[in-house]
Length: 113
Length: 113
Image 1 (tube, each protein chain N blue to C red):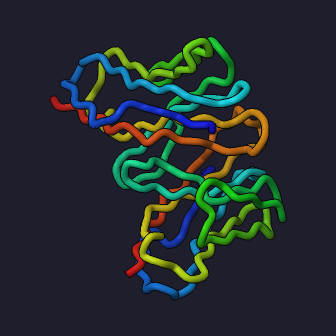
Image 2 (cartoon, helix red, strand yellow):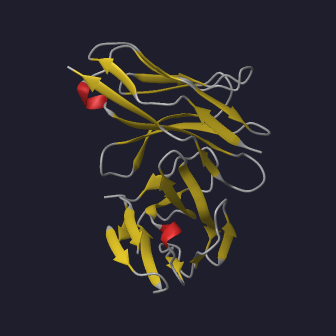
């Protein structure tokens, strides 16, 4: 079935370190791909998205590229800040059939000064 | 301000006592959905609605009901809550365009004792 797999956390980094959070997906067709971020006590908010193969989404220094050949959408940031500490969710929205939004299990990022 | 509003934010109830969690959006979105978030499982879709009077089951619909009588509102009903429905619940809305992102409410933390 359709699914999203992302790396287990927590990911613990020092400020200014490089971040990668892996995300791979299984889906028929060409889903749209999203990264959402959840800060403590809050709802999810969109971080970035890509709707077709080879698209790169970017926002606030974060980037992810839609790789159809590897069915991946890895999140990267060159230099993390303490304020980036949050839970990050990779998600896909199917482009055919039931209009479902499918999430990965989330990856907690902790950034220390 | 564009937003999705859920109420209540916190709720403690007893097994079997019917409850409703309300959700309202002010963005004129056609698509609305409910999710539950549990540790290690990410977000799982309960029900979704593609327009007024159109609802469909998500991945975990058992024990829940929804209705969509107006475009802006999408209440979640638990007719007879059980302890395994203790969870964090999120409502979301989006445009019908499958490349569109979802906007989330702040969440409702439900405890069933």
